[in-house]
Amino acid sequence: MHSRTADLASDGVVVSPATAQEISSSTMTTTTSTQPLSIDRDSSGIATLWLDAPHQPVVVLDQILLQRLDEAITLIANDPPKMLVVRSACKRVWVAGADLKEISGLDDDALDAYLSHGQRTFARIAALPCPVIAAIDGAALGGGLELAMHCHGIVASQHNQRGKPYPIGLPEAGLGLVPGWGGTQLLPARVTPSTSVASIASGSPFQSNAMPHGLADTTVDTPEELQAAAIALAELLDPAELPHTISSCGNEDAILAAVDHVRHHHADNAAAGVVAHCVATGVKKGFSEGLDQEREGLVSLRRTEHTTTKLREFLSHNG
Image (cartoon, rainbow, N blue to C red):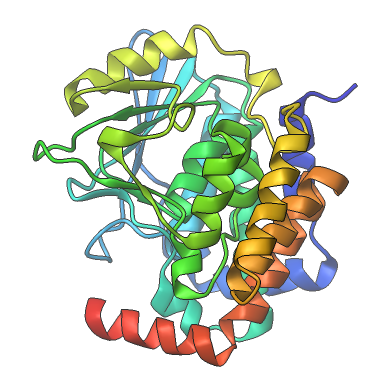
């Protein structure tokens, strides 16, 4: 009997030979020019993985960062610590999501390879034998939240380092896209389906000081409290049984009811329809099939007139 973590890992690393070749091709220039993300280890056996992107204004999950994350996971897997805390070196955000400018410039095959690379890398986080805790203290959007949900636990501060609340969620549908790294398969397993599925379908993030129950396993008021909260949470978790997906959380009927609600009330919204399809697929056919539908849906939506217009407007206002 496979553990849920083993299922996640095996599902995430299954790629076709063509996709594997595309991944290799798209990351060839980064494998020889990048260094793994920084890993600090203390005398008690606790390691901290630092997410950073010095080549970007904030931390975004572009191909360079994915490669650096992948290399860091290899180092951790070869010498597992007692526990791993995933933190961001950026004071403005935890992870702002995927690099939309990069996504806009990829052709369909390269975009599918980029999404596959992220799915495979995140699955390796879930498969680590030690407890992995995401310690969030700034905006965690799109791929940022998906990365966190692949960890075995999430602790989040209600306020960032400037003392202000921040957004956390999956905003892709607001740009005519859908999550591509497991968001539709993981968030409804954490948060009440009627809330989470509607949020994904509308692309409406939550605020850190008003998060729905279950989004974070533990919340604290300030970033200074995160490390102690992460250590306490790790002691309660069994990595072999985490993280939960919508096909293993025992709440399938409520999730499918939320899917029907989205289909009925957002019939004219292409992104919402794809979100509903991805969620329903994950419940009925499992995590791997759900991931496949995310990739296919994101690639197909990215080329529609509605989405290209939304992306162009977003990039023109946000550099």
